[in-house]
View (cartoon, rainbow, N blue to C red):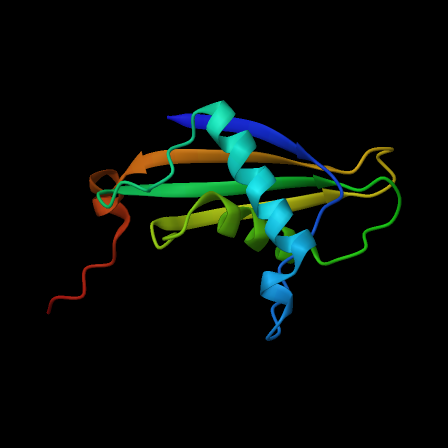
Length: 123
């Protein structure tokens, strides 16, 4: 299953100090991510038997004003309270796109499908 949606800016990256994790812009951005995810049908909780891939494509109106990896983490935090099943991911950024937004793709795979690629550590 694949879900895809976009969140228009301003984009707020994850940079936590004692107070910034609860700053109004950061909390609002995470809420907006969850709202758009709800509209796209992304589940609020991850299936503990599944594996997930999260990809973000960040578009900056002009130059990037925060690290792209911080946007990725903000999106992940907005999507899921418990995100341990997000085992794969990636991000990209485009500057001077004329618009500030992030396009999010969430893909669900099965944990059993990963068995063949696991390292056999038994001797």
